Length: 543
Image 1: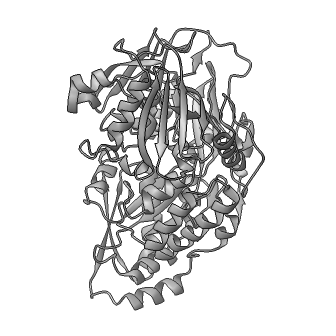
Image 2: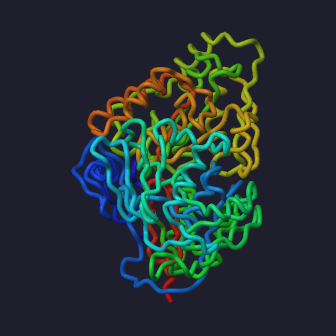
Image 3: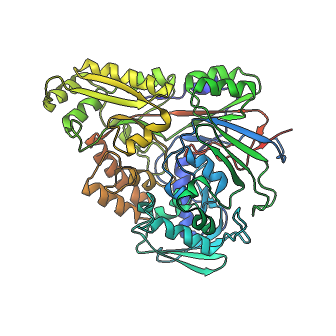
């Protein structure tokens, strides 16, 4: 399989690249076993992975003040982290809230609200030592009691957080040791727990604010992060301002950040070129040459492990017909999609894990290679009723429409009748979760631990399992792998799970793309993280 990285040639400024896959897995493991003291280190382990982009603004000294405007398609539904499902919500959540731990640009697990932690010898408890004197934006203490409240809230069945399955069953209890120390106990050794506390399940919320606002907390978020919530105008913008009581002295640098809802990529392009916005991401590869030549604009690339694919339900007709799913998989022209929608950038994908220590390169040549003859044979075996028409529903985002058009062309070549329908980008994922969309494009960013992605999508009770995938062997493999702290032993278990997932064809994997962001040259400290969530808390604007 070809690994096309020609796009590097037309970037003005190349980002420092590092191999984040092996480092992340080994470093996370070393952190777990050796107890974190503020840094993560360890020997390489596992297969190779795509490199991440390094930091910008290395020669600029951070300065205080200014407003940063970040323009993106802000399809937010809530700012309550324990009920969040939309990817773009996390961009704002990381500004308002702290997680117990964080990730650096190489997916190493590093301190955040927890300044250090210790792992018990039986690996069934983690003791977190919190930042002293941390406060929420409402003035209440962000201490061990608040951490316990937040984690208990996630796992409480009466709260009904969609994140519960990421902590249950392993989490058996949370205990307050003292004001600045909290211990998480598990019923079994569970390697992915620490990594999970760096994303949605690990966001710490103000107990007083949750009790005050109740179900409206998602419109009135209160955290302990560097920025406090000011305003959310749906389909317009979210505004946050510096929290002067932040526990990290001298941070943040910016006075204010505005995240503006701008679904049109051409409008975002104009905003960054004119300086109306200082930061954009999800830049369509075809637009990169235009940005390259724009005065005062820097382009960053991340050769990512995010997979693009097509998903369909396992239990809804006609997609409950395995032969139909295989026919569509064989009829997927990955190379055409890469050329049409990604300007020839990125890596062709045939399985979900394209980065990290569990990435198995030998799977790249497996799966359902584009083959119209095999697709026609599988469609014949599907024995569909005469006149069957398939409804292909996708976001009205320009790039997704281009992908859908390229796919529909080859699907039609095997004798299928394809009806395409575009839905508003801000509503598409919600419609999928509600079962109003069956067959659609999808894309998912990698997690610091492979369990974080595979479990939510393909575990029988995964909270993002929108295809109703259910396979006892996959459940068993994921559970066994999660209990294994030696990544060299866990990796083959994930490989076996991937093989079963690919064979089922409820997801048809297409591409691990190159991701592009652009920012005004006066912006400093830009870092592209492997999970694609821009961490804006440390950015500054040079005078």
